[in-house]
Amino acid sequence: MSRPVIAPKHARALAQGLGWFSIGLGVAEVLMPHRVTRATGLHGHERLVASYGVREIATGIGLLTSRDPTPWLWGRVGGDALDIGTLAAGLRPANRDRERSGAALLAVLGVAALDLVCVLALKPSRRPPLPLADYRRRSGLPQPPGAMRGAASDFVVPADMRTPPALRWPAEAR
Amino acid sequence: MRALCWHGKQDIRCDTVPDPKIEHPRDAIIKVTSCAICGSDLHLYDNFMPGMENGDIMGHETMGIVEEVGSEVSNLKKGDRVVIPFTIFCGECDQCRRGNFSVCERSNRNKSLADKVFGHTTAGLFGYTHLTGGYPGGQAEYLRVPFADRTHIKVPGGIPDETLLFLSDIFPTGWQAAVQCDIQPDDTVAIWGCGPVGQFAIRSALLLGAKQVIAIDRVPERLAMAEAGGATVIDFSKESVVERLNELTRGKGPEKCIDCVGLEAHATATIDSMYDRAKQAVMLETDRPHVLREMMYVCRPAGVLSIPGVYGGLLDKVPFGMAMNKGLTFRMGQTHVNRWTDDLLRRIEQGQIDPSFVITHTVGLAEGPNMYKTFRDKLDGCIKVVLKP
Ligand SMILES: NC(=O)c1ccc[n+]([C@@H]2O[C@H](COP(=O)([O-])OP(=O)(O)OC[C@H]3O[C@@H](n4cnc5c(N)ncnc54)[C@H](O)[C@@H]3O)[C@@H](O)[C@H]2O)c1
Ligand SMILES: [Zn+2]
Ligand SMILES: [Zn+2]
Figure (cartoon, rainbow over the protein chains, first blue to last red):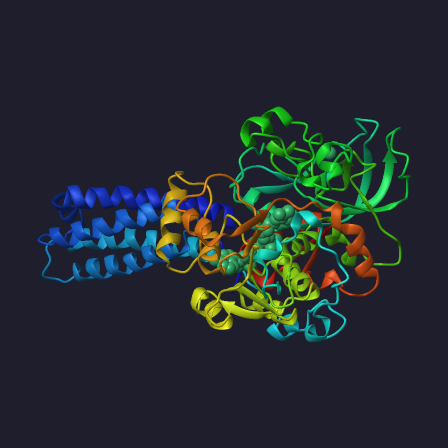
């Protein structure tokens, strides 16, 4: 993958910003669905818009509270796709307000681009880890583990760390 | 000099800071040749440990060459090669005379604060919270070592830094974790966490003669390294830990359990772990004791729980009644490093173990801040990072 457009530090700040944006938009959609449908040329879809609002609020809270915003950002990208689909339907010739839908669609495309930039910038550049076989060779021991069992039994456990005989297995013969 | 400094949650920077100076006749200054990032540093990085201040120098696994000594340090001289234990100790107080160096009564310069918070003070630690003295750490070009006449391990030339460095912390820590179990030839020792500490606990349990060593984690390369050390492994993201442990011990449970995870335990979709996450998020709980709960539950009655994993504050929903009724023994604490290091250095020299096996990344100091993230998130197959200032 090519280098992300922005540094991870800025992406994290952007994710916070997107979180607040989600909450703001979500609250508007839930409380004033009529105004939102009027502004976006989606008359008659108030309930759908209000349900989108609930989604936005949940995503916003997720973005602001979780340590790793990535899954929530992907959630936003998915939501953007839904919004785009809904607005695209508003472009049909029969819709008198299709210009409004068009304008809203442009705005959503812009925000969707921002969401994508943000989530890609946060993606850790993970060089492929060394092959597992390499780790299986790292024993640190001069011989196979089986041969090293008990190699340090000359060690005397200090008195303060010894288990009382009554708590040992197998029970000592008495 | 340059040093890695703490500036808040997940914000470590490579800053330029004043060189340390001798402040007390028992001090020494060492020029750092190698240092490492430890799982304990991650608790500071994630801001789970109270008492950090902006600009604190990180690091407590350090070795180097003596540069200068104070007037009362007669057993070290310029040019000596030393590993510095993470616990600072005086060597003379009641605790030190018993070998309990990590609870030295004199080396914590913020003793009155620690007395208030812990009831009684514990030892001073390098590069850690101000509750343990707030001493500048060793992820830097130079380190001031207080009580340097005692707080050092002299090491011979001819052995690479990589083989000796971990005498400062994780090797003795894994060792003490196993020693505390007082391992018997019939014992099954179950070890949670296959990070660097877990890796040394696995090898220590094997060398001390455990019949069976079982290691638990979910990171594939760490499990592979655990197998290399002779452990039977359980991937807790794929199998039930309790069921597998009971299977492997014919229903009895492991006699000895070691927690090499500490307060940032992960869990896959268990109710208690989600409870911890939620409470931690709203600051009603500081630690996530999932591993402790699992150990108490699965341990064979009258067994031992050994806890090198670090906890910071208050734990919730710990089934203490279960532990009490099962008659479990708890042993825990920061490691009394120098109590073990003469013996462990001898074992290294005799070739019983080469601790460098655990290193996956070696970088310069400037790369340090990135490496904190790489190590924390287990990116790039990272298990242990060594920094070369
Ligand atoms: N007592 C001491 O003196 C001392 C010294 C050094 C380190 N420590 C502590 O030891 C602990 C481990 O240190 P490390 O350097 O190995 O750190 P680490 O973070 O690399 O290792 C922790 C490992 O635990 C695994 N883990 C997380 N949740 C788990 C679960 N539920 N079950 C099993 N495994 C789980 C992680 O995947 C990781 O591999 C830390 O708490 C550290 O602070 C204590
Ligand atoms: Zn450590
Ligand atoms: Zn002391």
